[in-house]
Length: 478
Image (cartoon, rainbow, N blue to C red; front, side):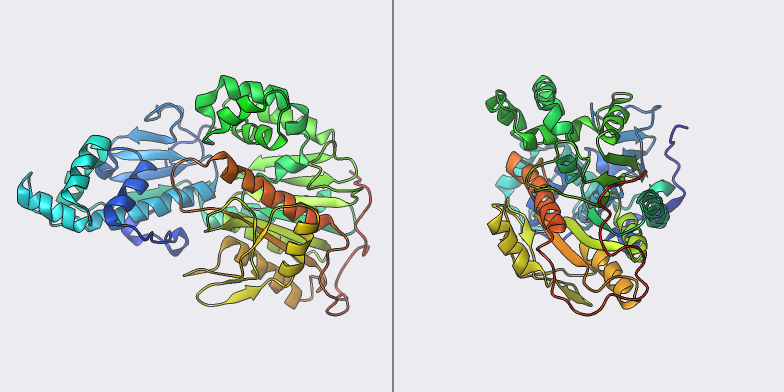
């Protein structure tokens, strides 16, 4: 059944629900902030009276430009986010920032005049030369400024039900139960990631098809979303780099070629990795013994046991799945991979995460940094990361683990590995080093998760409610 832009939940942007959130305010003049936000949004946005979020591109509408997720529909816009609430949240935060900046323009003198130009420069904290340059560099935004000054920008926001947090939470609980039904009796490892990059470290896809992925990337340079990736592919074509091949594979997974992803999943299932896709997420089970050609930095030595993975999707989906799996009493160890609002090209290991109302200390952080150095894995210890407002998605997952521990459902000795990938403020395309750091973060998280010698100090006996064998099952059994 084709998706139509008829979301059932709606609100005005000025009255967005709390879960939409606010992106951190950049320390830059208003004009610079507006230009950066507008670069990520479609031209003519100021005219939109309605913005509808849907999972899939409507087949009856044409995109505003080739490959764009934005489509025009009457006096509104439709944006296809691929079933990924994280992408929707990013666009919503951009819209909120755009609105807040646009509202500073209300009440400007009408018409083109010296008085209006001076007032506009003052409101945007810009010089007259910068305004003149804007007309040449971003004529669409310059035209929108006149519309924004004439009236309030407050479009109605409508969201397809599949993207709503409550539906995502329901999906997360179903996903977790499906994983528990598939995993044999006994304890298992768990990896939960905000992005899907760690999956490429488990899959043989990038290693087996390195040359083919390189060739596809070189033949489709305009499709690659990572800045500088084409040049990097050309420079290493003789000996494909697995990480670069994985970056191409990530783009190819979203390429509109029928059956391509299904074929990949079938091949992975034959080599010990069972994955499913939906709700903007990928989840599944890996038999660590049977994995064919996993990344050697992530899967070391002779691994054994079962690994459950939940990657991507919205925060509500990952939170519900994590809580359900933690309550099973069968977790051996947990690794959480997320993002940090920092710049850099090394995975980040924080000592603690704090927010307005609470905080959590990560006791394993010092040992994790030493582990990374011992195994030549990149890592940067950053002390305490503080966020204004509510908890980060990773902190919410840690809250689910803490809740299960307090309820006596989670072994108090369960190892919790937290690794974050630096992610500077949204804007433009990532370059190769910043794209590779996502893989590096997953590599460190997996290596630490599966290392039996990296463990927290014993803090007490295992709860009586723990079920199953205390050892991780050595073989996956269907």
